[in-house]
Length: 158
Image 1 (tube, helix red, strand yellow):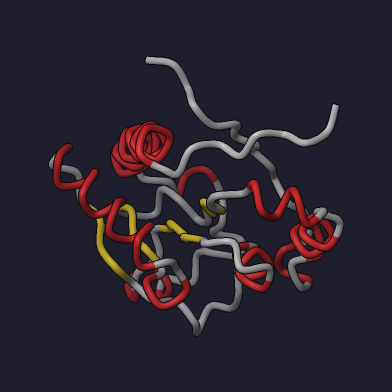
Image 2 (image 1 turned 120 degrees about the vertical axis):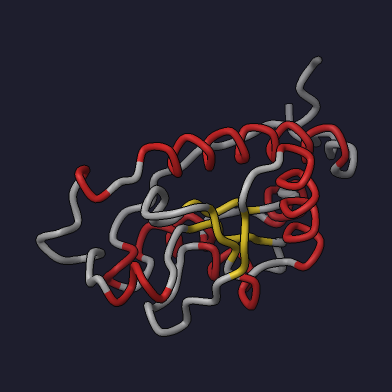
């Protein structure tokens, strides 16, 4: 199967200080780049439990596709809104009308355990089985989006 779209994987810096990296990236995007961007798939705090969608801060179509792919894989995925935790790098993309989805593993239980942004925030907190299931889901999700998203926009630059 041949890939139809271009994917850019970015690790943004300083999310906790006001999404500095993502804010800079999105602001420097040209109108053509924004028009050619089909979606922002934000991965945040994975591996503390099964995959979750931040439903209230994600595109309904992208949520639906993720739920469909999860059902086909018999992989767990739920919806947990995490406004009480803060914001996320995906919000900058929404301001430019780019559909976005945030996939995370926070639940009330993991939030109450005070893992993120504390001395407990280390590799030993990662539940490797959940992390692997999330990886499987995300790999299938991106492949599905590639096949069924709108056709790529032809580049106008040479």
